[in-house]
Figure 1: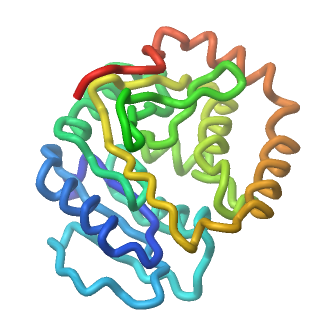
Figure 2 (figure 1 turned 45 degrees about the horizontal axis):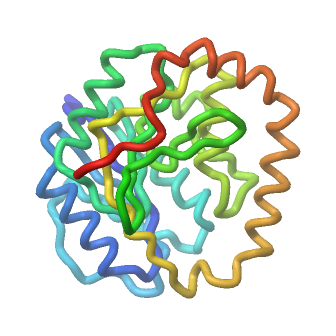
Length: 235
C-alpha cells in the first residue's frame, strides 16, 4: 500500500554541495510521509549516501532541464508533488503547511511556496497580473493530467508553463505563507551564457500561451481568494 503523501522533485547537474544541502534539509525537516525523486544529469554520480526514499535517477543521455524534471515527475507516487531547484533549502514546516493548504482548498491546482533569494523578504513571483510558482505544490493527479512542464521548452519558463496549464484546466493558483524555502540562487557554468536559450524559451512561451491570457486571467480572478501577499517579512 502506498502511504507517500508528498513527493519532492528536483533536477541536478554537477552541483553536489547545493544538492546535499537540499537533500539534508528535506531529510531532517520533512514531517509528512515523503519521497524525493531526483533527475541527475551530472557528469559523475554524487558519492553521498542517502535513505532509500531518496531516489536518484541517472539522466543518461542528458534530456535537458524540462525533460529531466518531467521524467522525475512521472516517477512520483505521492498524493502531492513539490518541486525545488537543487540550490534550494527547505525551511521547517514547509511540507506540512503546503499539504494542509492544498487539502483545505480543493479548487487550488498549484500552491506557490514563498522563497527568499539571498536576502529577505520571502516572496512569490508575479507575471501578467498573476502570481506563479517558482517552487510549488501540485496534486499529482492534476500534474499528470496537464502533463507537467511544457516539453517544448529547454530550461526557462517551465514554472510559468505549468501554472498556465493548470489555469487552462480550470483550477486556481494560491500562495502558502507558512510554506517557505531559502533559494541560494547559485550561478554556475551550466547557466552562464544561456541568453539564446532564454530568448528561445520566452518566445515559445508567449506564442503558445499569450493568446489564451484572457481565459487564464478569468480563471485566476475567480480563485483570487487563494492568493496572499507578494512579500513576507521575517524568518
